[in-house]
Length: 84
Image (cartoon, rainbow, N blue to C red; front, top):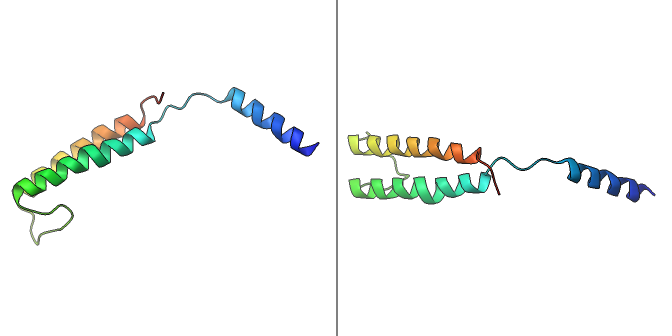
């Protein structure tokens, strides 16, 4: 009897649930494959290794980090987009 009540509650919850509006998988793909891939390429082109901090950041690294920040901000919009 108790399981029947739980089943009814679960069916009612599923019937009244709204659609998902966040895209966490899209956000993760954007950051990993997109932004970080570009940052690694930018660091490599500048002659550095992404993830290793030099004693003083040269202008090329600052430019790479600025671009990475802008890309991550754009990926944040993906997290709030609709998920099919």
